[in-house]
Length: 433
Image (cartoon, rainbow, N blue to C red; front, side):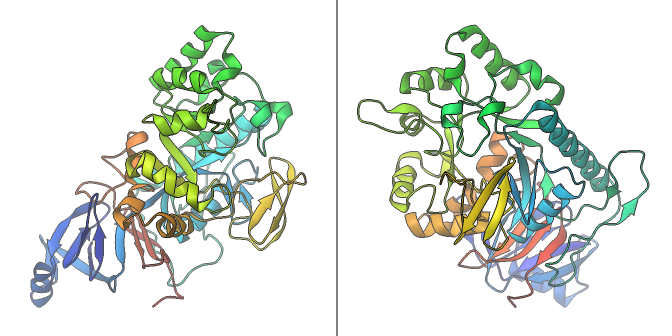
């Protein structure tokens, strides 16, 4: 069945379009005038011989589904957990925040733990691929905000194949262990190791982004160059982060192809007028920079400066959230470390920030308020930019015809009203009519 979203403000790549309707089934089929939809309704309620179901957006924004590039956990679970339904719970919670695709993010840990996480991500990607190729089309129960509902199927896998209702898993984000222990943040120092492609070669189908502190290989330039080239040849985003790199070291690595920066200003050498550091190199070059816009990791005034220097095309809003996201204040956990959450701020015992508890739609609201960026640019920072970097812009990240019907409907304060994944309604906010 074809669906048509009417009475919405369509967020395109450089403008907001009103007075039109968005047609989709599992893919975006096109944008037509409201008059065309009215004519369809007056006749047979069909479009090109297919029945049309109308979805009234009630003047809310209609945008491509959000992409959360960097997220450790939410809703009480974490990417590194061993329970088999962990990623499903993350997936469903992310859909409630307007996210239709995400990269579960690993922590610095011993290799067996990292490999277990990557194996689970690989399995869920395979299940999702199987589900998408089937005829099943799950719809969210109206107002469903409870436990992720999954139907069991028989399988020889160590994990159960189940219906997948929520945001899509695109792959893994490897944050550590190839970092600098001096800038580990909330990561475990004892598990930090130098970058070694052979350690991740078996998971090139899963890993979509990998973080590196280039200065840790400054005594072996050939090894650094080889690592960068091997990652890029496999389509991985190589990101600079958790790093004490000098400005000069950063620039050299950026010129070699590391065009991404992990949570700008956090866990890296900062800007000094005689030592610009990694942060200075990131602001000066065309690198794509992640930003945690929770107003805690980066001050609103600095967000304004970053926006002025980088522009929308080179910024990506992320959450970097931990399991405490979506949960009450109290004691939580990250990478085997106790985390204390008070007033939504997560810290280790030594007061180090331990990721965030923010959701992506909340980050969008903060950034828009802090900078005055127009809605299409804020949306670009959570959709098209990520899709372009991942090499998936033909499939996700826009409302272009032929793209997957990953759609988010939200109101002026970025409250999520509905989330569609490949045309299926996976979340509806019952609190907002």
